[in-house]
Length: 284
Image 1 (cartoon, rainbow, N blue to C red):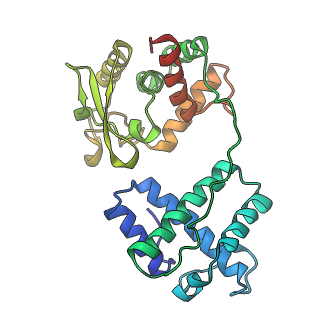
Image 2: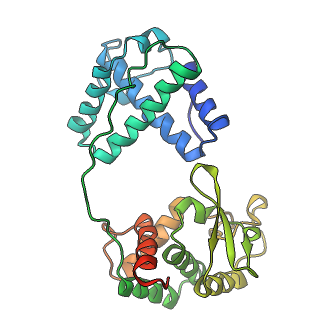
């Protein structure tokens, strides 16, 4: 749940707009809320409108449009400098903040007509560091799958299926968690998932994925499953749809058992691994 009780009304109106008109995902809306809360708290601090020195304790509920009208591009740059100087935030993090600020001020000026001038109109995205993406090699991927299959854990089939789908399909964490059994077309060997921006996309499954899913479904709990999770493919110990955090924990544990660096690899890196292996070997 997104905490919006302490938001000023114009911020909540923006969040409503992104959810209903722009059809943004709950995760995106949550990021907007976090990013803009932080930015507006900085503005209150920057303009010395309150005595509180710790930004996270600043209450922005009573912030007015008049304060927004004072914001300039220099103020936004000051915020980005604050993030880098105070928290050593990476360019990618600041780029996300910039994106949130841009769409927010675009709404205020062009949609809500609350501001005449857009201070973020010429706001540039921070230059990104060029880094070589990290991914598992083919041998490491095979090792990870072998370790997942050889576990004695009672959730062995579930965890193996999760690793198999990540390595073979390149799906996002939210896509995997959201899979319903009814989304799987076994005869055509394909799967429909809800991807970024709430857009549906089709993923074609190879034999490894089909076999892993079948093996898990054969042992998947059938009794006492929570009503809203009866169609969910992957279930937690509580017999409800598995959470993002649980999947991340599972992947981390399997990586550790395979002797792979959990600081270097993650769920996101498995997604990149799938794309890389498909490009290099055409066999995943």
